[in-house]
Image (cartoon, rainbow, N blue to C red; front, top):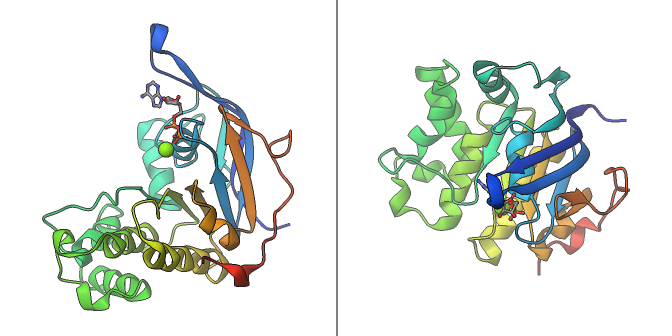
Length: 243
Ligand code: ADP
Ligand code: MG
């Protein structure tokens, strides 16, 4: 069995207050392994983003446990969680979240900067990460001058420049056309299969299915494919990816 990078057990999360309170997650068991691209699918409001934020240590569960690379997040304070994020996690948001006044290269380099990795070597690493997503020519471009697909590629370069053990991506192709969506999925697939990372992609786009090693479905805060939350791997034919 491949190394487990993230393990969630009996994770529950309540959001909001009073009458507006929602049980967003109602007992999730899930493991993410090295070298595997997992898809998390489910309707809008089913708890996908909440689960991703908890796995990425940006939100804490109301109950249950999360361990990242064997380290439990339960005892970690704010700074401890930030350290786990810095050491292990790369996050890709649906809407890119790039800093508009920084160039593509500076946006990527920021991920190294917050890890105290600065100077010439950091600049070189940022350029290399941009090259990996096919954007070396755009290193000096500001986000505004880039297409949506290019901005998402910068965001992905930023997520993996610091060599995280896991990449978590929240609907990374939803704002993109087919060609750009396919390019993004190829990059994430390569991160899992050639760089041996754990990759979890939230989506409701069926065109992404052929890229998956495993598909997990969530409905109303519960994993539905497999009672214990560990559904059988859905091995899909890779060749059929994207129309
Ligand atoms: P998804 O990403 O699958 O669309 P979310 O994880 O964003 O779902 O949301 C799960 C549920 O939690 C939804 O019912 C949503 O309305 C609710 N929710 C999300 N964020 C909050 C919040 N800050 N306060 C109250 N309810 C929330
Ligand atoms: Mg969401």
